[in-house]
Image (cartoon, rainbow, N blue to C red; front, side, top):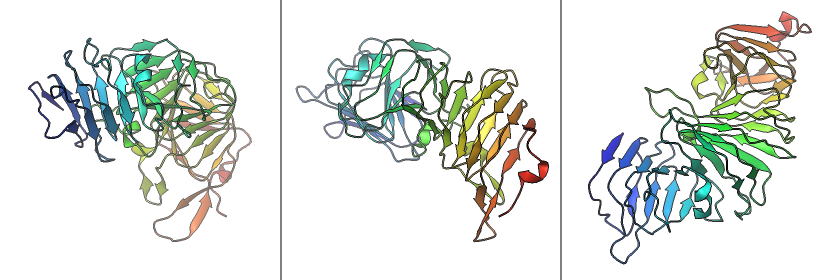
Length: 365
């Protein structure tokens, strides 16, 4: 983390920043070069995304803002966001402000990155209740996300872009997004981006906060949910609509162990939720049953299948009403694959439905 309050004079036509993986707070004003516009470019490598906060109320530059594998966040004082600046999001980019007024600033051809909504800090919740109308975006295959790097409630009606039926949500660098909007229709939901590390990893070794999304409404969408990265928090039995929960994170298990920190997480924040959705495990899933101060028991009543494993953590009880399908892993000591059913217990209790016999938990094929 670093702060800079002095005058910045770029070497070229634009202000340019990137890499380092940390946070840079700019208190000095960014301006044009006389009559010549200056823009702002923040471009980083995949594994070292820089976050730039613009905190001066005297910013007056008029060039475009470009963010790729990096974040640009405008402060909340009037003047931090110049009135004519437009936004260009690249892959893994994040541009954030405090409300929906920034939507018109983004290039209508935006197809990737994260449109951010940000509160003053992570201890202050910002409620965004205005409609979020994305219909003006015209990219052929729009795959951008709505997200936050702080703590935000999205409660307005969400209208999807043309050409997509997928709601995409993500926390960024430890951000937490509560989606209280009702999600309906034949649409599907995607949580996090497994190819963008900032939607999964904690943003520093001290805070140890994972990026997360909470689906809080009684949802009726039927297209299913894809958990790609970070934490997915459910508040009721209908949080995930009626379709299958598919886990597509890039973590995996090996014969000598696995990295639970990199796994996508499913977590209840109310006690005794019975989640009816089927679950398909294309990668490991950490089911954490200890949200907040309680133990919040969880029952997965749908069919669980796929080609990976399930880790249970937390002090609460996880009940698996059904366990189907064959799970496989690649052993480090053998080139061939073995098909097994994998359940890993970290803490607390696994409880299986009455139809299961213990001998069926591990069977080779």
